Image 1 (spheres, rainbow, N blue to C red):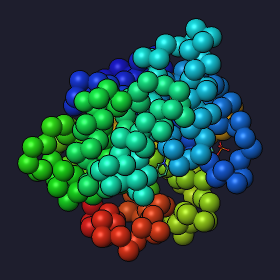
Image 2 (spheres, rainbow, N blue to C red):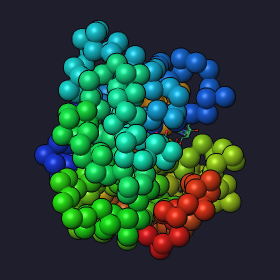
Image 3 (cartoon, rainbow, N blue to C red):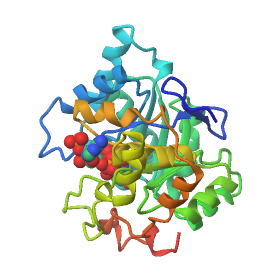
Image 4 (cartoon, protein in one colour):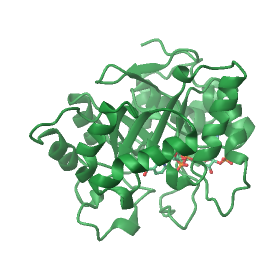
Length: 300
Ligand code: NAP
């Protein structure tokens, strides 16, 4: 596939498509000045990003919506150029809460639809299908699902739509070989979160796993192409068909993370990076550890 800065969408199983690179927007609301997300999304759109990953519980969805609307008003983009992914949070999964929660997101964004809406628990899927039918979400998917949970949904009697994607942690230290293979077989795209190895915020990140961007192999390969370890980590996933959603609110790094379409890694380099897998998560979601659907007790 010839990926370019202008054209890096890949098909989804429902006929829609998703840009392989998106901007992540989670930042601790206590430590982040108001307006930072608004500025970041506008800079990202100017830099060429057409995919934004957000959530109601990031408490900055209003800023994402404002940035998109301002860029549409400027004539820089049309609504259909942008791919916005929103998320249903764990506490909102009873089926009767799914549509009202998505409608709340749309009101905050001041948009008519999201391009993708994802859920974290299987119980909400039927209600999610109804949101697609109502045109509130163009595509529907899941997040942090293990194989068993994906199978549970896909084997549900009367399933109307398959999940198009599964958003999970994915980067060179956690390459997800088995889940990726399973998802490939079932035409489910993996969207890799924390593709740069997270912000290493000790309040929710397992910092016993070393910092990804200091990795000597990523840095050595970067040197060869005059790229940073971050760019190599992102290119690695994009080149194997995994969508990446790096978060940055820093103008220079937002632009840096987009500069991954002017080079490609050799097969040997892809293998070297795959071999960095430590199979250790940065994001363990320990607050959900006692939930019956906690996804990370299974092997994958
Ligand atoms: P990430 O994208 O791997 O890393 C973000 C951190 O890296 C920030 O501290 C950022 O700081 C820094 N950074 C960005 N670009 C850099 C570069 N080129 N060089 C060096 N440092 C760089 O981590 P993440 O925020 O955990 O994950 C990305 C997105 O995935 C989130 O924002 C969110 O949208 C989504 N997510 C979803 C889930 C889920 O459960 N579904 C879980 C986690 C994350 P600056 O901002 O200062 O650049």
